[in-house]
Structures are given as C-alpha cells and as structure tokens.
Image 1: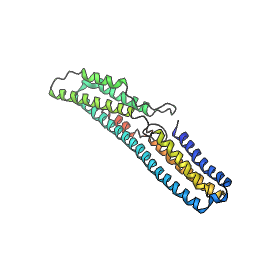
Image 2: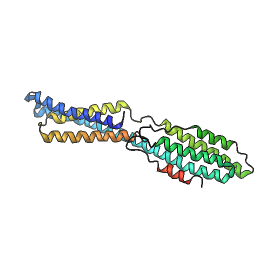
Image 3: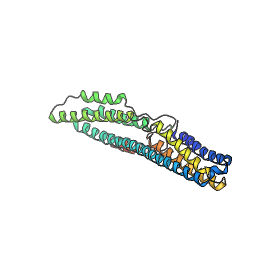
Image 4: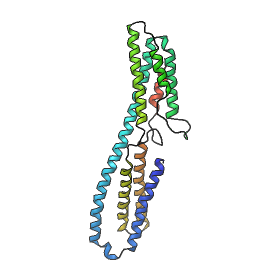
Length: 250
C-alpha cells in the first residue's frame, strides 16, 4: 500500500475520532461534562499525548536514519565506481571489456532503481553484470608488480561495490514496525476524540480539528516516505550515480 493511501487511512481514523467525540458530547448528560470530568480527561489525555510524542519521535528517527544510511551507501557506491574505473584504466588496455561492462552495469542500475516508467517498481538488487566484471578481472594476466597490485585493488573494489549493492537490497524492508504505527494511530484517535468531547460543535472547532488531523496525517506520510527511499514522492537522488557515469570511460 502506498504512503499516500496509508496516510489517508490515518487521517480518516483521526478525524473520525474527532467527529465521534462531538457525537458523544451531544449524547452525554450534563454532569458528565462538568469541570471535574474535564480535569480527569485532560490528565489521561496528557499521558497518552506524551507517549504518542515519544513513539512519533522514535518513528521519525528510525525513518530518517534509514533514509540517510541508504543515501550514504549510494554515494559510497558512486565514489567506488569512479575509483574502480580509474584503477582499471591504469592497468592498461586489457581492461577495456571490464570497463565497458562496468559502464553498462551503472546504466542498468540507473534504469532499474529510477525507472522512467513510474509504473515499474524500483529494483536495487545486484545483477549478473557484477559477477561478469569480477570474472574479467580474474582473467587478467599481470605482467609486472604494478599490474598485480592494480588487479588486487580492482578485485577488492568489485567486491565492495557488489556488497554495498546487496546491502541496499537487504535494507529495502520497512524500518517502521507496523504495531508501532497502529498503536500510535489509536492513541491519536483517542486524543482527537477527547479534544472534541468538551468543545462546542461549531464550524470553527470542526475546521480546527480538520486542519490538525491533516497535519498529523501529513507527518505520518513524511515518515512513510522516508522509510521508502527509492519509491514514492521523497526519493534518494540519482545524481551521485549519474555523476559517476559521466566519469566512466575517460
């Protein structure tokens, strides 16, 4: 399910809770709306609001940490790819095929991770091209110590790039536990219901509750978007890998 759809469900739950509070207010006898009742409800909702803030902070930290980690890994892959190509170039013309494979693998990665067709899902898993490059480097026959050193460095870089590519694939799962999100929405629904429980049912109150519900669901939307860095509206930029592609083959 998309982030937009989930945030829409969250908005419906929260604003529905606010409307439910207005309905309950109309049904409650006057003694239930007395000052003592208000004070008790405020104390209880203050506790739930504090817990909600803590959980919301944890979700934001988790999503932002996951987003930053994967963005850093992509930048590192891009830097390694450039250095990899320079190492192969220093080795000599024997690495021409390996360099061509490296360039084509970067082009393929850009097309798979950031497809032009938005209906296609993003794919960050490694491909057979990585193994083919590794095989081409192993097939090299160094003629001197310098070439042996360059071959060893190239093999290490090929391994590092492949490992980080698979690391990105392994991190594709959500970093946000579903129970955390479900409980948070439940708490927020209760809080909004308490807001409207002691408020008059007029246009100002309803508009305020509507704006607040939109704001909270917007925060949930941002969290979910950060948790999906290669899909949706907020994506990791492809600029580092595209910049690396421009440097290949020089």
